[in-house]
Image 1 (cartoon, rainbow, N blue to C red):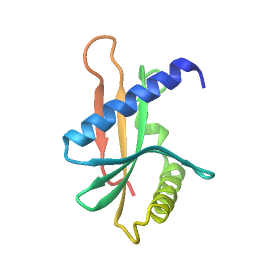
Image 2: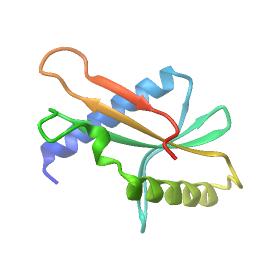
Image 3: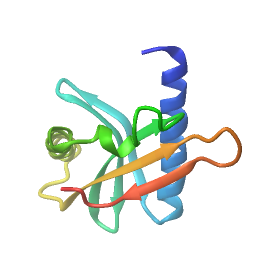
Length: 119
């Protein structure tokens, strides 16, 4: 991955974290990794464990950020959330998978779309 793409991704994750905390969620972890993959954001929403995938695009030339999160990715996110919970001592939590799509604009604030509970 190029440095530019990494910077765009980090920026999008920061935008997403700010949006979600403004909505009352609490960030528990960022960029948590294990052998099976990575969770961009792990949050708590009034006792519900939220695994959030953040997709950031600088344009829509290659489609919406939402399109990058299909059924296989959602299944992997759920497995990663269960593993995160186990490793952090959270037994049998209610788990929700969210996606935050961030589209950067040439001018003005990024467009942010939070989709809750995809699986």
